[in-house]
Image 1 (tube, rainbow, N blue to C red):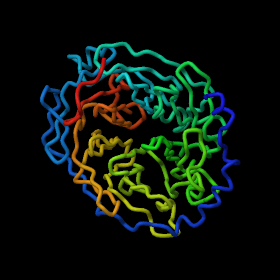
Image 2 (cartoon, rainbow, N blue to C red):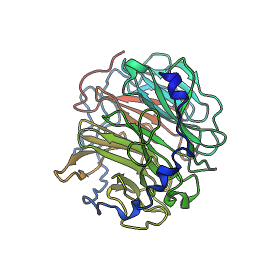
Image 3 (cartoon, one colour):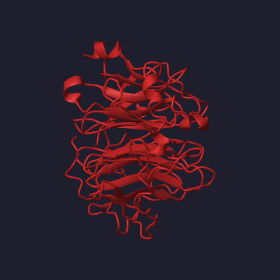
Image 4 (spheres, rainbow, N blue to C red):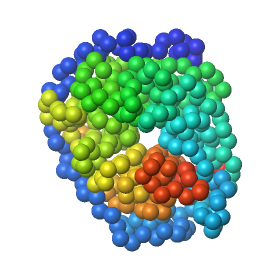
Length: 403
């Protein structure tokens, strides 16, 4: 029951004893893992959507064809024809996206706390569902991610990663009910507040946190900052500690593939280094700011020009990650070996330059992808329609989205 959940929120103080149990994490590691793929942008982009254009890793990338996507009315001066991939326009810093059983998506605005429902087909209005109050949207904080409960048909719960006036938290709520804390006490800073959520096939929740602008916290075993946390649906540690892995700088994306059991964090590189795709293994240390043991395995890297990598998703054994710098969606085949390690084929690009900077990508149950733009972040070139939500159907996506 939701009232029970709200009275059993897990705070940093409650899990302190469990945190102390991760002091030996840095000594655990699985080595360098599989060799890192290279990023190979394809030269032949088709920038106008067409009915037979699909996103296929390893081939020349094209813009996916119409999938029954939805949009609010475009600005005629910027969009001479209705783009079937654009399903919403005019949003403010859309960051979190959660897909719904009816084929729609909930989109959270980072700076306003507003949550809107977006239809998967172009031309429909966007509906405001609710606004989360008491958030701090300054810096990179605010409403940072959304996730639908694996048991949504029974409990109706939506989970959110948010920045408050005092900390970062994971909360849950129904579309019309009260907001209840799930995990509180994640350190907050003037920067480094980014966080992402991903459920596994058991219904447990992975939470990727950032370092709150204090790099040392990523290596501090009594802090929730710069970690991957692993809890059940009411915030209790799964196992002896809430901390699953440590040593993360800025968790731009978090995605989990139940088929290969691959957990991946995408994070920007430090001091001009390539952006990283880290394959998260329990007990590993990912080296920020300096590792005290062998860094955890790297799944791959993406060249950066300074403002970074975005979110990630896995669908039908294909891994997707957004590159803000390269204004593209990157894709690669994801495979797992018998030993339990995972590897990527060469990352190839699609949508390059079509919609500007792409931030979040989420895979729906039907194989379609939802994406958000980030052209008003001070690094892009916005148009009148920004920010936008895209809905596309990659090759092998499993059918049209519901209206």
